[in-house]
Image (cartoon, rainbow, N blue to C red; front, side, top):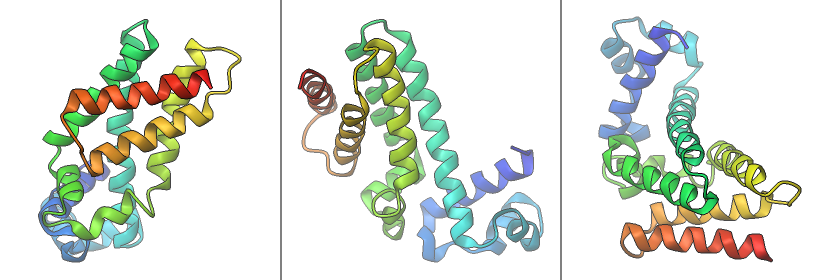
Length: 180
């Protein structure tokens, strides 16, 4: 990824967190990045393309951190707990993701992780599936991986308790579905 692309994505992410999809203006993204509006259009096509690119970029950041944590602990379940802790804690720090999840200034972005969130679900499931396959060779782990990711996303969207309880629930469901 070029420096300009990264600068455009970071600028767009900041503006999205502050104003949401409808408040995002390509000219403001360009201005913050120090390029022309045409450069933004050339790079992403349109506003929806830019927002999708931001979603993919953010997803890659999260998945890199998750994959790192999944490799750090030899116990597959403790590794998952560590990966989910990272996800939940990173979400609290990430201004854009927090805005999307809480609806503050960015309520119109929620569809990008729910009804139009297939890329996030797909790639996160792949990372968890690879982790489980490494620890349980020959087992069919796709169902467990996808169920676990969906449950973690659900806890992010609608927390029902403290972080440790959420992580326990996610890991417990993963263990049960692996034994089924």
